[in-house]
Image (cartoon, rainbow, N blue to C red; front, side):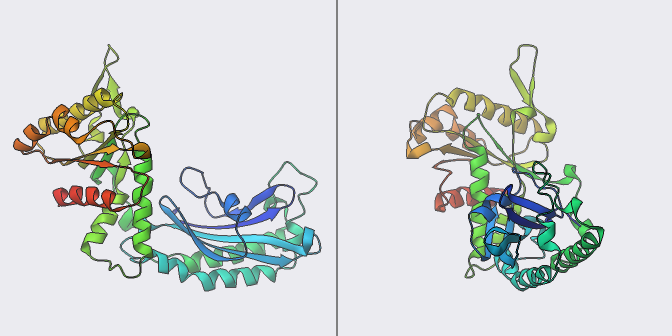
Length: 346
């Protein structure tokens, strides 16, 4: 089963708090939503929750129990997918997730029919520091539980040829986001992913060719970190690793436009990429974004045009464009910037 499809069952323990009973794949806070927080602050019902590249539909329900405080166990079934992985098979992710509501409800109903489940949720009480609830359950229960769990995991997973998506990393074309530390690179990626999901949610938006191209771009954006920079004997940044540039189709340079302090470092990083592109003879587009923190702007457009020699570079045939944007906002300015980059790439 691909890790891009995950099924989890969580419950609220009065002593341990939100606890995972079982998950088809390990979760981490960098890639996946915090199911504990969702369970802790959400009421009974079915709802969609999106986090970065994973979109989820969650079903919270109660099971009557003589062992639970208040007489009810509080559980949540979570089905999540990495939407971009299925972009060819699922064109409307939002409604696709909603279509899984009957499966979640049916799964919850069958869980309620397992008599031993409430006892299992409390059988770890003598091991208060351990969250090994399921491992301590009777074998008969575990056999019944996993049979039911795997039944719904298989039922809810999209049917497709997994091998068609496993491309060699060297054959993937990327858009790299680079720039000084704390300039907003990661925040920009998160905002783009939210915009992508809102497009799926908009029932009036047609899944036309331009939308699919946008999806492809978002799925292939990577943040270029300082790990991709070589240092020479003088500890000066000399060049970017070849695999950080040679497979790229475009670049996004982002810097803090609310302060002039980082402008020199920004220009140095820009020149590294520019020199590499000129060595290759490629005219890959470079989108420059001045991130306006709190909508404050110390670095103006005129300063950027002057310091980056943008007019001269454009005359030399380089595709380069500057946008002043607050990347925390999910508005048309970001869409316009990405649209410009998209046009240059195709």
